[in-house]
Image (cartoon, rainbow, N blue to C red; front, side, top):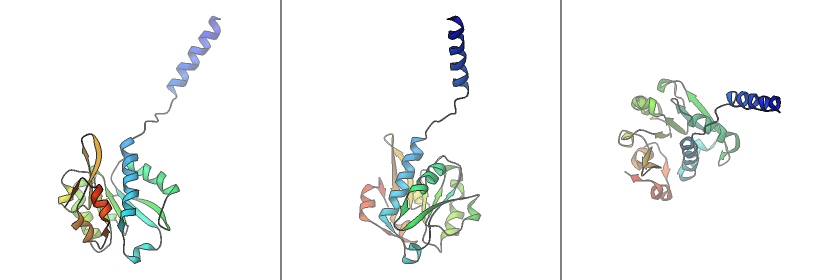
Length: 173
C-alpha cells in the first residue's frame, strides 16, 4: 500500500512539474474579437476589397497569437484574413488595419507617415493616441475593455465609419 501511495505521489509531483503554463490572456481575446468586428463596421474602398484582408501588427503582445488563431477560421467579407507582424514602423507595407502595441506607441508618428497614402485603419492601445492620429484606441473604463473612435482620423484614410460603430464607441471625436 505504501509503495502504491509513493508511486501516486511521485506521479502527481512529476505531472505538476511538467505542466505547461496555459494561462489565457482574456484581454487579448476580447481585443481580437473587437478588431474583427471593426471590419464589419468600416468600409474600405473598392480597391481594398480584392486579395487578402491584411492586419498588420507592430509590437509585442499576446494579441498577435490571438489574431493568428482567428485568421485560421475567419474571413472579412470574401477575403481571407492574413496577419503580418512588422519588426518596426519603417517596415510597414500596405495593409487594411495596422495595430500598434503599447510598447511601440512612440512610433505612431512614423506609422502614420507610412500609411498616409493607403486606406489603413490605425488601432492603438495607449491613452491619448486617438488625439494623435489613431482611428481607434483601446481603453479600459470601469474595469471593462472599451474603445475610442476618432472618426476624422479614420475618414482621412478614405474609410467610411458606420453609425453603429460610433454608437458602440466610448468616445467619438
